Amino acid sequence: MLFIGGATGSGKTSIARALAFRWDLQLYNVDHRTYDHVERLGGHTPDWSRTPAQLVDDFVAHAHARWPLVLEDLTALPSSPAAIAEGPFLLPELVPSEAQAIFLVPTKERVRATRTERGSPPALAERDLLLAERIGEGLAVDRPLAEMIELVAERLSLEGLPRTVDRPAIRRFENDVLARQVRLWKASGDAPAGDWRLPFVCECDSAGCGDVVELTLAEYDALGAARARITKPKAA
Image (tube, rainbow, N blue to C red; front, top):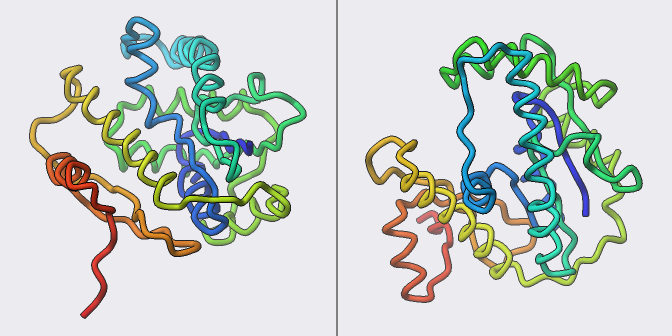
């Protein structure tokens, strides 16, 4: 199991996806388990009126509450291929010291730019800056994404990992997790109305494939009912 943590705006999701697809590893996205974990914990409603410092305390407390569920999820994954777990809730104080882990620390400018792009309230940007400080000595995000991907690949020991893989099966499982997350999000009343398109990953059996196929939940369910794989249409 490999862990990639870090504050919002550090590129951890993009880096983890790139490495998982390149090396045919399983990908565990903590954010894709948010509503599942909330349901298993009996509910969690953030109070966004609190100060940034209080929001940090809330975030850390919630990360500690979710950690046992993360471990349950990871234990339930197949033993091969190896897996990359990524997400902001993977704090250095939670991940075992003997684990292969990298924690990404973005610049203040990157954190603020990311929150601005997402339309988040200013308090969230300030919270994320405090969280980045809490991570402490991590890997500075100080270069373009492509270079960061290679740097993280160098820092993690990817050679010699379990590689026996049923690619279609592990990608379908990851797609099912995303679909469940969105269903629970809609059921919570937090999601915007509509049946928008979601980024499902290609379920072909080609080594290193990281293609994304955008589908609505209805289209995804129809493919599942027909036992059809999600594959990217070939160019004419």
